[in-house]
Image (cartoon, rainbow, N blue to C red):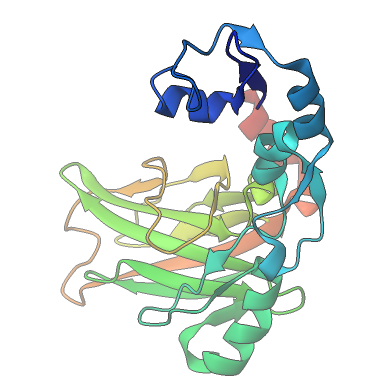
Length: 244
């Protein structure tokens, strides 16, 4: 952001200059080649509030800092992952919302503990929530020509990316998913990506299961899941993932 002026001293900001086809709005002389230092200093001193102020962010900053702040703001709004619900707020406020409004729509678990997770053929997602800290995760299931892909994302601000690690495997925030079916096993390990809504398209990388055969006559697939926070994940698992 900055200021420019025409030969007659009339001023405009860079944004307005481009919209006016580089003609002064006052005298129509060409404008755009002469910087106006006085106006630039005024603009640089103006502090603006975060666009997530209504979700709880109290930060203010100069305009040039807006991009970096937006990338790291922990109050970035997230949409409720339950289908048909229009609630949107910071991830911290999604926790009590799910506990109060969607008790029966969420699978709750504890970090580091395995729990069963059945998945039907037509089921595209499942919402998971850690019992103690309320962190929210979404299991994604989608079909490709080469098989079924199962992956997990953290529902939270962009800064939560990489804060959890997951493992998808047979026997069995980092997450561990295991598939046990017809005596065959598969394993996938990765750090989680973060998303801000259920409709965000997940990464294509995940646990890949051959098409059809793993659902059998029951049309179900049975998974075991363990989720760890990044710092609590067993060192041998993190080391093997980093090595890859």
